[in-house]
Length: 119
Length: 107
Image (tube, rainbow over all chains, first blue to last red; front, side, top):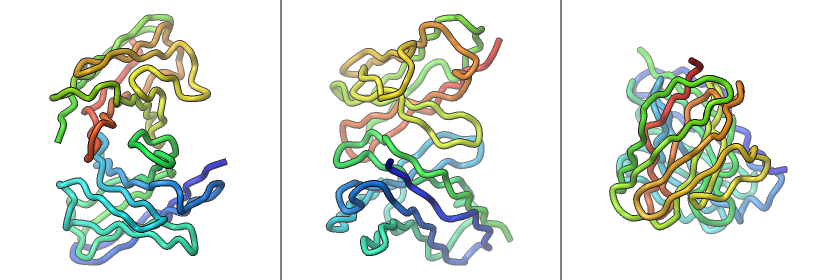
């Protein structure tokens, strides 16, 4: 069974850095793309970017390019989403999700990580 | 980016009703369209891919149709567990983009 398990909720102050994680299991981690999706409070879904852990090929949606960094460590089957300097507007639920080996239909989802940025 | 527009933004319906949600793409996307269901406090769930293919385990009362720029999601007979928010997403080109969502509420 494919599972994506995300790290726990975070509360941070503006300007702080953060790295959240998404651990894959039940499949070949290097063969499935993993994407990140943002959902701000009470709002819709926004695709942030995607990574192929096999070769670290990474693509960012224009709105998120330069704002976050997506990475993966295939030795521990884990993908990451990180910020170098958080803003209050980064407060949101963040989901990792996978379309499997190709495409953009998100078959598998993590449970979400709530990030709260407040002074 | 391709813009996806759903209508209506919200709809009230009763158990047993037939409901249709529409999604329009700002440019042609062939059949590269997915539908998701999201319940409060939960991650979205893939219902339909390739515009009309039912994801494994999804009840047959859900169906999708369309191609090009205009798509529909139909729930043939609403069940209590179907009250949720539904999103379309184009899977034709990067970046994939979602519609704004349609909230299906109990009348």
